[in-house]
Image 1 (cartoon, helix red, strand yellow):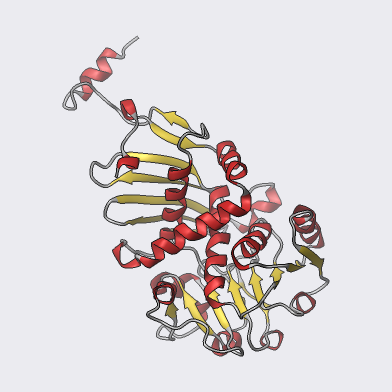
Image 2: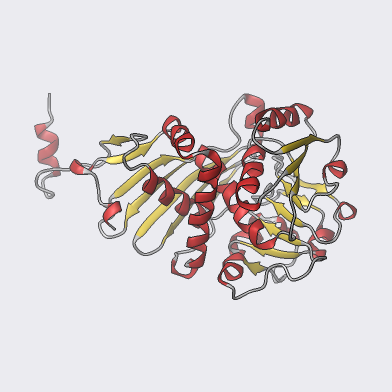
Amino acid sequence: MDNLSPSPKALVPFVSVDHMMQLIHHVGIEPMLRGLADYIEADFKRWELFDKTPRIASHSAEGVIELMPTSDGEVYGFKYVNGHPSNTKKGLQTVTAFGLLANVGNGYPVLLSEMTMLTAMRTAATSAMVAKHLMPKGADTMAMIGNGAQSEFQTLAMKAVCGLKSVRLYDIDSKATEKAARNLSGMGINVVQCDNAEGAMEGAGIITTCTADKQYATILTDNMIGAGVHINAIGGDCPGKTELAPAILHRADIFVEYPEQTRIEGEIQQLDAEYPVTELWQVINGTAKGRTSDRQITLFDSVGFAIEDFSALRYVRDHIKGTGYYIDLDLLADPDDPRDLFGMLIRAAP
């Protein structure tokens, strides 16, 4: 708990977007992705300690605003996040976020951080951590279907954690594919731009789908999926938004973060409420089986869960020390006498 004590005068460290980017470059993109994956995996191993609840969502025709809280009994964390697919047409981000950690013992916040950049990093790190446990042996090529804001992070995380050597890109918007290819140039990975989804999946042992439309979509049809692949489905993340044909789900062994949330938001919202799925924490702990054969299709129905954000914030808290990549915010009232808040106000009069 020492690293979660309030700063002197109850100042709270705040990591801005600029500071987060400086921290990522300070650590290194791929080393930080590996570090985040390690922190997430460590927290999955102690999954049963955490408070767990589906995220608290406010839906609208345009998108969703959500709160994602959790606690391990000593530290509390939450993330505020939105998802608005039409934002890109307005020059805005589809997803923006910020998060907080607090000391359960006294309730004081101990970290406030941007989480738009950090969510992209933790989502990719989670995908790669899961793929490490589920992907076919020797897989070194990924099809990246949907080349928006997540695509480069997903690719580099798979490279850093799983040894990915080649990525095959496809998006219905060729400019998005060109953007992703340009950003990945010089990153030590072979990049192939493809004209269609079928072409992107040639030779791919890992298939990642990450599209943005808030609708029941069929990005992958059943005939596109051969035996022995791992599907990393991260685009379907709210009610009414999916990417995979139901027939694929029936052929795959499905792995989820938290069933109560995934059945509302994930690909499995298309299936019966009792359809069997496996919780990832059990695979990581060795109490459930992951990949069991070369021909098995494994599917990570990823929607993002609060414990992953908790892990990411915990990583940032541990790694900003001594870097200067934060500022202290005067966020908490700190009267000399805790019972005399009004006196503090009076003494502050101009």
